Length: 500
Ligand code: NBP
Image (cartoon, rainbow, N blue to C red):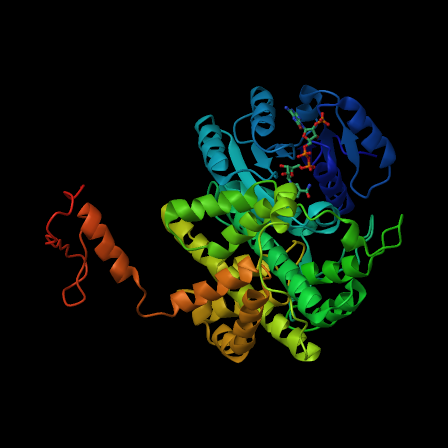
């Protein structure tokens, strides 16, 4: 028998909405569902008659809202942007003060800040919750990054903790094996309250940006090994499979192992050779890069990962250029085993730098937006459920537990020692890529970030002198206190007037 009123409601029954609704129902919560196109809702409800909590379909928003217990909790999982605003605007006249609207889509965090402010002014509560893990995560346990009104998190906490991915309390490894109607029992849930207004969606965006970096770095490893090692996709699958048992143990390495052994069902060729080398993107990497530029925080590796997708997308232009532009001939490596180890180390070191940049970005954002982010907790909730889940995240949690005020992940003793041990190989791989003409933008940029960050002196002295020369932009002196501005009246005869 269904309860008279549902525990929670969900609007938007596309891939994410359907799977998250079933996950919620699997955990014994009754959920009401509404979709703009009614047939989608009817089909979904008809196909899922016997969930532990129960799924209740509503044909109209009025019927949907009336089916919810108070304070009403409504998850919106529709296309981000205008559609989310449209749904909120249709819902508000039907809700009461204190009801909670939760946006689970990939919203731009500034939209979430705007919506939270707007709804709060009208007496409603708003949560912007990042949901990561794609379809599978939504169904069996995503990583959930809720931000917004803190009192609303207390209202949804029991549901969020129940449906989130779980990791082992001791090892931090994801607990897998949930099946429809039978969720994983026990473990530590991959969710925590992130912070006010747009904090949850901001952290979700940085998660996605780190994902962009991880994916591109794996692709560069694959490319270098294939070109310099002459490995077949099946051999590469074995290599990635071995890596997945060590420091690089992660979901993205795991799926790469699977992809590289997959054959195309039509031709029998390696599947990876059938897929056109033109990558798409939905925007979270770009948003992160734009925000890094806006805040003046160096996050070059994410930006390079976005640009690599952009360069891949101009396939026809690249094919034409390949017939005209020259470069070195690729020379096969003599020591394949050493190459594999070196590429492993290059991937590992680049990954550490990419995560260091992501955490630096969040560190700057919390000052900009007056949040108080707990980086140890953020790394913790990324250990399971999400696309960047990795054994490595346990080490990041440990780093921030050891020192919550860590200035940069690179300065943590564990990561410092890891880079010390692996950097010779990292440098060798980059030199090999350059001399053989193989693009490796995230590897290069991560190393430049590392070398730049550890440099007490960089050539910005010359740069600032140039700025003072042509624009009277002034400079600080090495022999005077910081903050004092000087300008040299450049003496060359005949040079044009300074433009200020
Ligand atoms: P989509 O992003 O493809 O959105 C489709 C849903 O939006 C359908 O239910 C559709 O209703 C509804 N919708 C649209 Br479009 N315009 C609407 C409007 N004006 N009013 C009411 N409903 C409207 O769905 P998704 O891929 O399930 O993703 C949902 C959210 O989750 C997005 O924000 C996405 O970025 C985010 N997300 C997705 C993933 C993923 O792996 N797909 C992962 C993490 C987060 P209809 O049936 O009537 O057309």
